[in-house]
Amino acid sequence: MNKKSVLLLLVLLFSVLPFTSQDIKAASEWDQAVTVYGAALESNPDLQDQTAELLGATDSDMVDFVYSEDVNQYINQSYDNSVLMSSIRIQQTDEGSGLKINIDESLGNITMISEETYQNALLTSGITDADVTIAAASDVTGESALAGVYKAYANQGEEIDPERTQNAQDELDAISDISSENESVEGFSQVQLNKVITEVKVEIINNFNGDVTEDQIRTILDEKLNANGLDGILSQAQIDRLVEIFNQLKDSGIFTGEEAQKLVNSSEDLINRITSSDAFKDAKDSATALGKDIAESEEINSFMDALRDFWDRIVEFFKGLF
Image (cartoon, rainbow, N blue to C red):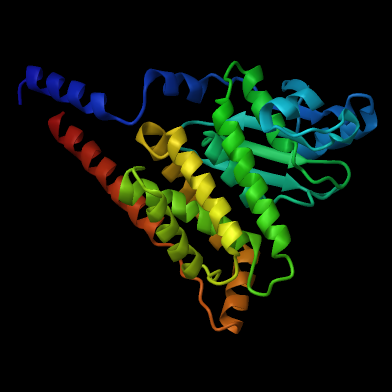
């Protein structure tokens, strides 16, 4: 193969690669982590210091506070500054590294939202590669932590699309509400619901390329509920609410193009987190006791194996050229 042919092949290859110069910039432009404290800590240095230790904050971090107006702007919720205590520290990581969430509850519990629920919501907002720590020095619901993450991005000059943040909040609210409504229902757990939601997203992308009707969403959702031991547990109103959210996500464009690929890649981390958790093992035991079963998710793993194989063949091809 002559040099002209090699050059043409390189141009064609890079024209179809799933990233752009903007993505490369975004993956490397954060030179420092961002710590965002709840507004209630601004006048309480002792609590702020305790929270900083939980978050692993350093003197080199960019620091800000999340106020009631930020919560209203980013997640359309109303809270007084005096109750905003959940805080976050975030460091953007290289593209493809995945989204990692850690909740430190050494001093205070996040009472309403699990790590998996935060992760699902942030993936929906378009945040796919970052290390995030969430903590509070006393018990809080944790609802305002997402606003802190979005404000951190704004501090770094990267505003998150408001439609995406609202979709993420709608998803988080739905997961929290459905979990609360089924708290005493045998055979239900939030970890199962998060697995369902993640798997529905992946199937819409992988098998439908994001072009999916409401009837198809309902069919996919029913299949995933059944596969995760939740068939017959969620009410019709709860199912309708989830269908509406998936419709919103489809309309936002997150299931197509470059965004879809990032979402699938990061969803593998979430599925692995869920299936390796003690909560998931407990859910499987409960399902077995009720005569149900929770199937392991092979879809994402098989897709990622195929993707890795594709890139291995690309690398070997260019090794052969040179």
